[in-house]
Amino acid sequence: MHTTTLHTVTGPLSHEAVRGPALAHEHLVLNLDREGDGGAVLDAERHGPAVASELRALRDTFGLSLVIELTCRGMGRDPRALAALARKTGVAVVAATGWYYEPFHTPEVATASVEQLTESLMREIEGGFGPSGIRPGVLGEVGSHGDVPSEPEARSLRAAARAAAATGLSVATHAQLGRGGLAQLALLTSEGLPAHRVSVGHQDLLDDPGVHKELAASGAYVAFDTVGKESYQSDETRLRLLLGLIEAGYADRTLLSCDISRHAYLEAEGGQGYGHLFRSFLPRLRAAGVDDDLIDLMTRRNPLRFLTGASTEEI
Image 1 (cartoon, rainbow, N blue to C red):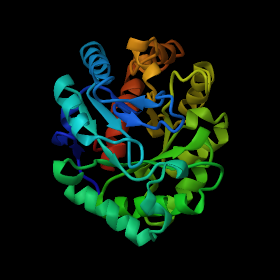
Image 2 (cartoon, rainbow, N blue to C red):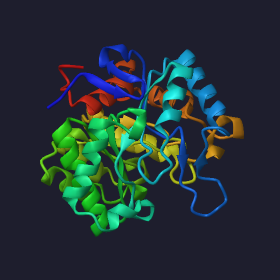
Image 3 (cartoon, rainbow, N blue to C red):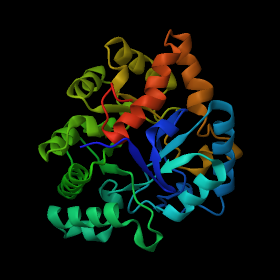
Image 4 (cartoon, rainbow, N blue to C red):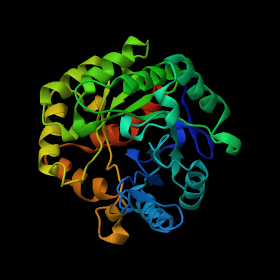
């Protein structure tokens, strides 16, 4: 099952309307603050103007056309704020549903069966986020930590896979520090979800080319989605790993983004911002010999194929 229509926070959008690049894994409104320091927060009122300013500038300078916004349940999701940002900036936004990794699970996960969790996701996918009517266009970032998902994480992943298979949406995962991606993929596909409907997250944090190639060979998307987060991994290492995937023939399995998840990452606060991919990392890829067609593949066509389930011939 696939469609060439995206479900964005402002309504259906044809993939043909997305002429410029996409950011495949971002947060525009977020609250992951468990320490009480307010660091892991992107507040709609306090930080929204800075976020909007960056998106507008990226639209004007680089043609940014789409953001896949993977803030899900337990992460401070705010679909109405996302819709307001999309309207202010002219950048389409796809919102998400699902459950992040276990420390951030909302209470219902503790006791609900896979069937009950699936039903909960289906209600949101088909009916929208509460009275807003805004519908998710992706499941994510559905998470696990460690090499094997915990029991609650396994249930949430299975529910995401079942809901995705039933509705034609795709699943983007959170693999903590890049670990556990193969186990995530095995679990998701065991529920009948095709591998090409899965993006395995944070693989640029895992310096293991063999895992990346195994994921790509299966048909899944390999997300290099924390570009610029130098405290976790150097962009030099990311570049080496990505070039290895490209040289192995898997450019069509890669997704790129920056995963802005703290307000200190915003340009207004001296951070690298959402534009680091375009301003810093893509020029380094080009300098290494990657041509504009492959850049377009990784930053536009692949995100659209991931979201819609379309084949390489269709987009």
